[in-house]
Image (cartoon, rainbow, N blue to C red; front, side):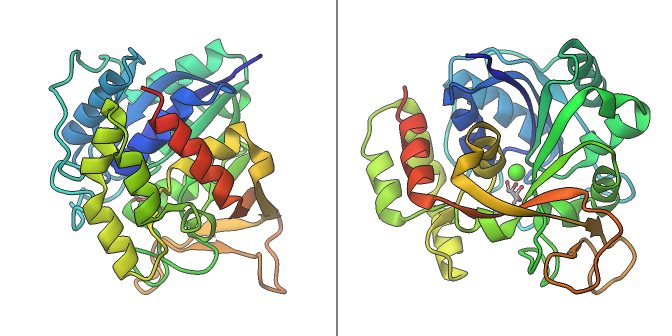
Length: 309
Ligand code: RIB
Ligand code: CA
């Protein structure tokens, strides 16, 4: 099989961890690099967490540090939705190695050139690193096949009534990405909140003795509780969606739309304004907005991935 080369830019984050495990397991994908950004936790923690997740997988994927704050504003630690350590309090051994010395944006560009335009850039956190790479290297769009991102929403928010966390954390970076020439796939809250694991499905996973299952058994209880208290069906594994879409697009549906980001208004700051449901349309349809997922297939595939070891 001619695997798709994928780069994962992330802010682990328990659902980022699930996304990396899934990408490692899916036979259609070949992880060629991982970069980290401040988001769910400070950069030092998201980088440590990414290295620990690679150790959990017994993989030596190169990990590159990215931005420790958004483009235009200081980093503000959120309510540490993923716990103070970013991994829901689950204990993992110290990383066996260090991150690479090259900054994330330089590594993304070099790797994209090496793959001659086939590289799938999967962005699972604030888009700061991707924006910096696009600004520093104007020809980067010539070398990226797509940017598949978890972020935004056509209808609602989880950080404010209008804004989803990854976009809200760095709206200026997100605007740069949505205005870029790279074909984009947006997995917003419409689809990612459908990609949940129920308490019973998580219990099934936790009943396995493998190291990865033990990690998710320990890392997810608080997240499950918070999601259910917010009225969702279970733990929303947001970041697994762009990964699964990249490998198995047939499990999803969506529509082309115009998507741009609000960066000025105080009330709607960080909103991904989409023309999906309006009679007034933007001049261009710059993004494929994913709207639905085959949840049972998602649950089966993610369960298979996390029980692999
Ligand atoms: O809103 C969900 C997103 O914010 C996910 O990427 C999660 O990891 C957090 O970063
Ligand atoms: Ca994330």
